[in-house]
Amino acid sequence: MKNSKPLSTTIKVSSEVGRLRKLLIHSPDRGLGKVIPSKAQDWLFEDIVHLDTMRRNEYDYYVKLLLYFLDPDKIKGNISAIDSDPERNFYKPGVNGYFNSDRVIDLQRLLCEILEDEEIRSQLIASICGIERCSFKTQQDLKEYDPNELAKIFISGSLPDGTKRMLFAPLPNLIFTRDIGIVINDHILLNKPAKTARTRESLLAQYIFFHHPMFGKYRDNIIEIPNNDHHFLLPDDEQQNDFNRSTLEGGDVMMVAPRHLLIGCSERTSLYAAQQVMRLLFERNVVDTITIVQIPKKRDYMHIDTVFTQVKKNMWVLLGSLARQGDDSRKKDVLHFFAPKDMTEKKMKILQFYKGLEHKPIEIENLEDLLTDISQNDLGAKEEVKFIYSGNNEFPFGEREQWTDSCNLLALKDGVVIGYDRNDKTLEAFKSAGFNVIKAADLLEKFEKDELSPDTITDTYIMLPSSELSRARGGSHCMSMPIFRDEL
Image 1 (tube, helix red, strand yellow):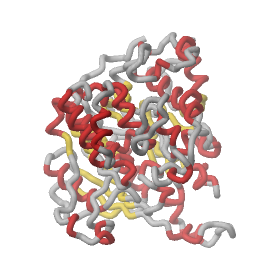
Image 2 (image 1 turned 45 degrees about the horizontal axis):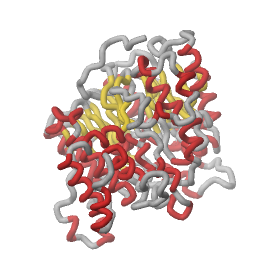
Image 3 (image 1 turned 135 degrees about the vertical axis):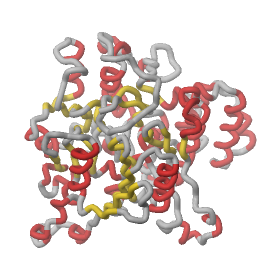
């Protein structure tokens, strides 16, 4: 079985729901198994995870689904053999038997490939040892490792499994490849992480995008966000002011239509960075409409893709308490006694800017109005625009299930999404909307038996096992960086 048309080598993303053809991922690495409770939140995890369960019983299904939709020749007819290998070599970059797809691409593989170059290798060792404050001896010792093992060390922070020695902190958040950058039409926007725990992650991404031949012809299209010119002169408390700090993560950026970009201002993305991105994109004529969506600066809503994502041209999933429904004044007086005090104080602000008219933004009243306008006017949806609410908009399930990523879905194509299996009320809402809801394992079995095909299924929510993945506070949308989608 082959894709309906050959894969273009072009890097281009102009929507959230066009047929996905190429993306970057990162499978859970040995560093995740070394996160300890006392450091979990410093490293941006809410809990420690059981690594083997996360890999074998959860993330491996994600990889198999991606391959079936994007590169089926790598997996069709081979699942029994893949699953019977106790070493899981199919999933491990750099070993014999690795799936090695050019469409489902692990960042670790790209890092290994650029480390084959001696000059890049030397520069990156020095850079990482500098930011991690390693000794000169450690820097010299790292030069002795081959590129494959060195890539693992840079990501996991630890030496080969047998040594049990950690050189520096792991990068558990690298599984959320969405946050390292985003493709906006034929440009690549690199992130500026808000948290120190992601500094090395950002450096690795910078080296990959600027040095790997896959991105060679796009080097002039890579956008880096500048700091405030006088940032280093500001007192520490003023550096954290939203008008001075320059931080942005990919979960706060959505390419919703060919000329329309959304940028969230959140706990992780500052207004200053959003303004700089808007200026740069307008100057380069990459888009002509940018909508700034300001959400409460809370851990619950770390990025805009934790409170809404697109399912199909005319359908979105979102958190009701931050939508029009959440602002309904008739509901504000009806609160359960154990509801949080700030339940009625959650506010959003939405401003839409147009190229050449940046000084005259339009304020949009609520999220549903914005998303309806995108579906109808940017994407040309002819059908009624529909919304599915987290937890079926039932108290307290909306907030509970948003916490476990009910609103964080990856569209493999228009109307076919991957999400977690644990959000029962949200799944009920999808069923009520006419969606087929199916477990990942059951769908793969049907693909193997030719009972269903990735090319023909429609309106389907694929349930990914998620007991461990959900502890990391990121869903399937977070765990992907699309670099090529078909145009809608």
